[in-house]
Amino acid sequence: MPLKKLTDVGEITVTEKTIEEIAGYAATHCYGVVGMCEKSTAEVIKRFFGSENLRKGIKVVCRDGLVSIEIHIKVSYGVNIKVLAENVKSDITYAVEKMTQAKIKDVTVCIDDIVVNK
Image 1 (cartoon, helix red, strand yellow):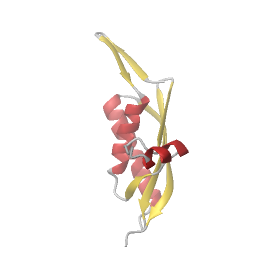
Image 2 (tube, one colour):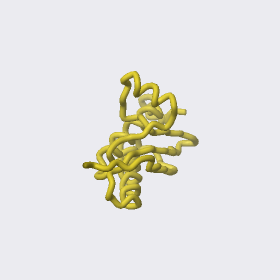
Image 3 (cartoon, helix red, strand yellow):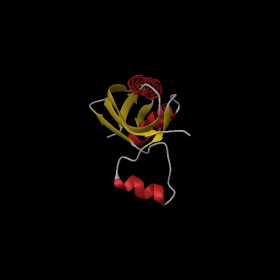
Image 4 (cartoon, helix red, strand yellow):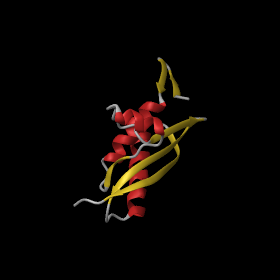
């Protein structure tokens, strides 16, 4: 369900896909985040056929004006995972609230893979 806000000149609608894009951009710009992980088999199939985007690995649910975000990421070996997860949560919360004026209920960060750079 998209977020809707009434103004004196009309209605503003922010879709869940838009919030996924914002969250993906914010997460991929955090130090230590290598990339996103697929959250479903359908995303693996999309990647196989060449469809790659910032929404990969992100699920957004909007209910009662509150936004819940779940994100699946790959991190670089050697980073402090707890600190990295807190930074990702903080950056996503800030970016989504700043750009959409939505209230964040929760952000769940799932570390699905650790990448070793040689």
